[in-house]
Image 1 (cartoon, rainbow, N blue to C red):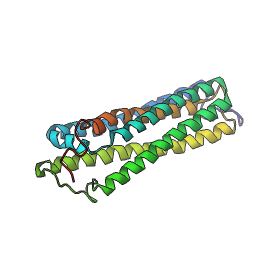
Image 2: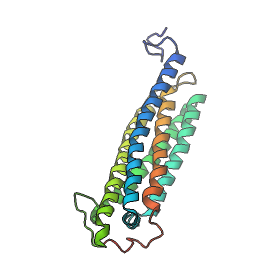
Image 3: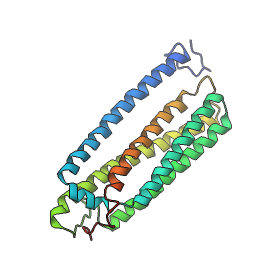
Length: 225
């Protein structure tokens, strides 16, 4: 049974039971996230089938180099998160703090790059419903606007998950600094790692669908501005 100084919550009998419950809860949460992003990927597939040429030309508006840089940042952050969990498992507090800080650093870099991407799209009048302007082939206008709507919705939702993740990371970092974790109890670090890897994985799918579809065309594809 737990006591006031035990990491085991009062409603659990053992730390193993607590860890198993947290793991099941996290996987159930991730299952709902998969359903959410799965619906968005399905919408993308439907409209890409409906507007194949417009999606191709609109995708050429993406800066695939910045998208690739952000992909690199997230892959590195996933690797450092793996090392953070490993450090927690081994009771290496310094390593845990260092790798958590590195994960947060690369996650922050991702959001900084995303901010400049969004600013560029705003100045180029790419935002549907706000300042969208299409001066290319008229028959591609509706499809191009749908592409950018999906782009901002999907990447915006992903960025929101990144912001939430960084907030959770700060909490994990502080509790690690206060010495809350040990080789016997590091479940919050492990659960946060699952969340972070999921967010990274979503981006791995978003990048080719949004940035590389029209990367072989000249910038703008001759259909915008």
